[in-house]
Length: 122
Image (cartoon, rainbow, N blue to C red; front, side, top):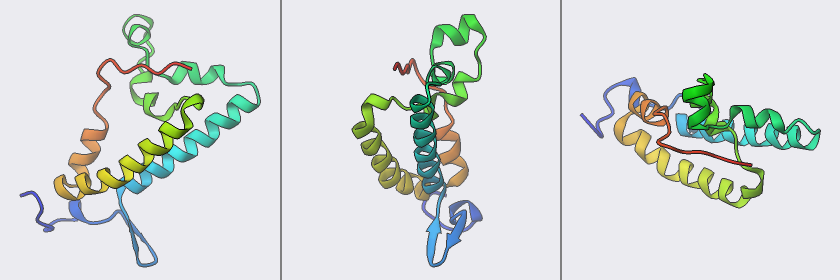
């Protein structure tokens, strides 16, 4: 039943002192770390590696790059840093509430749904 904290599915993953760490917090931290790594890759001239990880439906269907289904969310456009900050705020603010409402497992399943025609370009 939604909204009833009767199982571990509605509890935080870990605690940092008195503060709960939910899956949403871990996702935001992972996105930020990936953005920093992406910036460093671009700074040293290895930014073309990110093009292999970004989602392109034609490459997935006809080129066999199936890993792009899993890696598209971690490749952020460097030119859109302000949108990245807004996306991370929205994920943190609303994702926490969605995770609390539907539970951890359902939230992870919702997050892992493949993109619907989403394509990021640099």
